Image (tube, rainbow, N blue to C red; front, side, top):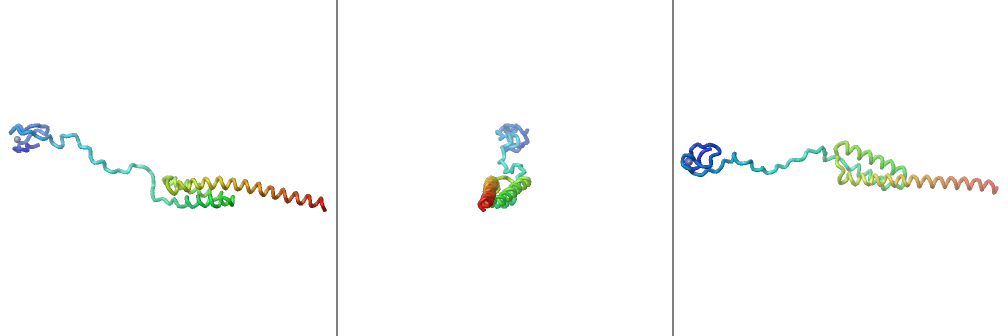
Length: 141
Ligand SMILES: [Zn+2]
Protein backbone atom coordinates (compact mmCIF):
# COMPACT_ATOMS: atom_id res chain seq x y z
CA UNK A 1 0.00 0.00 0.00
CA UNK A 2 0.97 3.62 -0.39
CA UNK A 3 0.52 6.50 2.01
CA UNK A 4 -2.56 8.52 1.22
CA UNK A 5 -0.78 11.67 2.35
CA UNK A 6 2.73 11.47 0.83
CA UNK A 7 2.57 8.44 -1.39
CA UNK A 8 5.38 6.54 0.34
CA UNK A 9 5.31 2.80 0.01
CA UNK A 10 4.23 1.19 3.30
CA UNK A 11 3.68 -2.33 4.58
CA UNK A 12 0.17 -3.44 3.75
CA UNK A 13 -0.86 -3.62 7.40
CA UNK A 14 0.64 -0.21 8.37
CA UNK A 15 -1.66 1.94 10.52
CA UNK A 16 0.43 5.06 10.08
CA UNK A 17 2.93 6.30 7.54
CA UNK A 18 6.60 5.75 8.41
CA UNK A 19 7.52 8.77 6.29
CA UNK A 20 5.02 11.46 7.28
CA UNK A 21 3.17 9.89 10.19
CA UNK A 22 -0.28 10.20 8.65
CA UNK A 23 -2.78 7.68 9.93
CA UNK A 24 -3.58 5.04 7.34
CA UNK A 25 -6.91 3.52 6.67
CA UNK A 26 -6.41 -0.20 6.71
CA UNK A 27 -6.48 -1.40 3.17
CA UNK A 28 -9.62 -2.90 1.83
CA UNK A 29 -7.85 -6.18 1.21
CA UNK A 30 -6.73 -6.39 4.82
CA UNK A 31 -10.24 -6.09 6.12
CA UNK A 32 -12.27 -9.18 6.59
CA UNK A 33 -14.17 -9.63 3.38
CA UNK A 34 -17.45 -7.82 3.53
CA UNK A 35 -20.17 -10.36 3.11
CA UNK A 36 -21.11 -9.99 -0.50
CA UNK A 37 -24.63 -9.31 -1.48
CA UNK A 38 -26.08 -12.80 -1.31
CA UNK A 39 -26.30 -13.78 -4.90
CA UNK A 40 -29.57 -15.32 -5.83
CA UNK A 41 -28.74 -18.91 -6.48
CA UNK A 42 -31.36 -21.45 -7.25
CA UNK A 43 -31.01 -24.28 -4.78
CA UNK A 44 -30.23 -27.42 -6.66
CA UNK A 45 -33.30 -29.53 -6.68
CA UNK A 46 -34.19 -31.99 -9.41
CA UNK A 47 -37.62 -30.40 -9.76
CA UNK A 48 -38.59 -29.92 -13.36
CA UNK A 49 -40.99 -27.15 -14.15
CA UNK A 50 -43.12 -26.75 -17.22
CA UNK A 51 -44.30 -30.35 -17.23
CA UNK A 52 -47.78 -30.95 -18.49
CA UNK A 53 -49.90 -31.60 -15.42
CA UNK A 54 -53.21 -31.06 -17.23
CA UNK A 55 -53.80 -34.80 -17.94
CA UNK A 56 -53.68 -35.44 -14.18
CA UNK A 57 -56.33 -32.82 -13.52
CA UNK A 58 -58.51 -33.87 -16.46
CA UNK A 59 -58.43 -37.59 -15.64
CA UNK A 60 -59.00 -36.74 -11.96
CA UNK A 61 -62.12 -34.69 -12.73
CA UNK A 62 -63.41 -37.31 -15.19
CA UNK A 63 -62.80 -40.10 -12.68
CA UNK A 64 -65.03 -38.31 -10.17
CA UNK A 65 -67.70 -37.27 -12.70
CA UNK A 66 -67.86 -40.69 -14.38
CA UNK A 67 -67.54 -42.70 -11.15
CA UNK A 68 -71.32 -43.21 -11.28
CA UNK A 69 -70.69 -45.36 -14.35
CA UNK A 70 -68.57 -47.67 -12.20
CA UNK A 71 -65.97 -49.29 -14.44
CA UNK A 72 -65.52 -46.14 -16.58
CA UNK A 73 -64.63 -44.08 -13.52
CA UNK A 74 -62.34 -46.85 -12.32
CA UNK A 75 -60.44 -46.91 -15.63
CA UNK A 76 -60.05 -43.12 -15.54
CA UNK A 77 -58.85 -43.28 -11.95
CA UNK A 78 -56.24 -45.87 -12.95
CA UNK A 79 -55.15 -43.68 -15.89
CA UNK A 80 -54.95 -40.78 -13.42
CA UNK A 81 -52.67 -42.78 -11.11
CA UNK A 82 -50.49 -43.66 -14.11
CA UNK A 83 -50.26 -40.00 -15.16
CA UNK A 84 -49.30 -39.01 -11.61
CA UNK A 85 -46.58 -41.68 -11.57
CA UNK A 86 -45.20 -40.52 -14.94
CA UNK A 87 -45.31 -36.90 -13.80
CA UNK A 88 -43.34 -37.67 -10.65
CA UNK A 89 -40.89 -39.88 -12.57
CA UNK A 90 -40.14 -36.91 -14.85
CA UNK A 91 -39.32 -34.80 -11.78
CA UNK A 92 -42.65 -33.04 -11.48
CA UNK A 93 -43.75 -31.57 -8.20
CA UNK A 94 -47.15 -32.35 -6.77
CA UNK A 95 -48.54 -28.86 -6.50
CA UNK A 96 -51.34 -26.91 -8.06
CA UNK A 97 -53.15 -28.75 -10.82
CA UNK A 98 -51.17 -31.96 -10.31
CA UNK A 99 -52.03 -32.06 -6.59
CA UNK A 100 -55.73 -31.33 -7.15
CA UNK A 101 -55.82 -33.89 -9.97
CA UNK A 102 -54.21 -36.56 -7.79
CA UNK A 103 -56.73 -35.99 -4.98
CA UNK A 104 -59.63 -36.06 -7.45
CA UNK A 105 -58.26 -39.28 -8.93
CA UNK A 106 -58.23 -40.91 -5.50
CA UNK A 107 -61.78 -39.69 -4.79
CA UNK A 108 -62.87 -40.99 -8.20
CA UNK A 109 -61.24 -44.35 -7.50
CA UNK A 110 -63.09 -44.75 -4.18
CA UNK A 111 -66.43 -43.60 -5.65
CA UNK A 112 -66.01 -45.92 -8.65
CA UNK A 113 -65.32 -48.93 -6.44
CA UNK A 114 -68.40 -48.12 -4.33
CA UNK A 115 -70.46 -47.79 -7.50
CA UNK A 116 -69.18 -51.12 -8.88
CA UNK A 117 -70.03 -52.84 -5.59
CA UNK A 118 -73.46 -51.18 -5.67
CA UNK A 119 -74.05 -52.25 -9.29
CA UNK A 120 -72.99 -55.82 -8.55
CA UNK A 121 -75.45 -55.98 -5.64
CA UNK A 122 -78.21 -54.46 -7.79
CA UNK A 123 -77.55 -56.92 -10.62
CA UNK A 124 -77.50 -59.72 -8.06
CA UNK A 125 -80.89 -58.64 -6.70
CA UNK A 126 -82.27 -58.30 -10.24
CA UNK A 127 -81.09 -61.79 -11.20
CA UNK A 128 -82.51 -63.19 -7.98
CA UNK A 129 -85.77 -61.36 -8.75
CA UNK A 130 -85.96 -62.73 -12.28
CA UNK A 131 -85.13 -66.21 -11.04
CA UNK A 132 -87.74 -65.88 -8.30
CA UNK A 133 -90.38 -64.62 -10.72
CA UNK A 134 -89.54 -67.40 -13.17
CA UNK A 135 -89.80 -70.11 -10.53
CA UNK A 136 -93.03 -68.69 -9.01
CA UNK A 137 -94.44 -68.31 -12.53
CA UNK A 138 -93.66 -71.95 -13.19
CA UNK A 139 -95.48 -72.98 -10.02
CA UNK A 140 -98.49 -70.86 -10.90
CA UNK A 141 -98.85 -72.31 -14.31
ZN1 LIG B 1 3.10 9.52 4.35
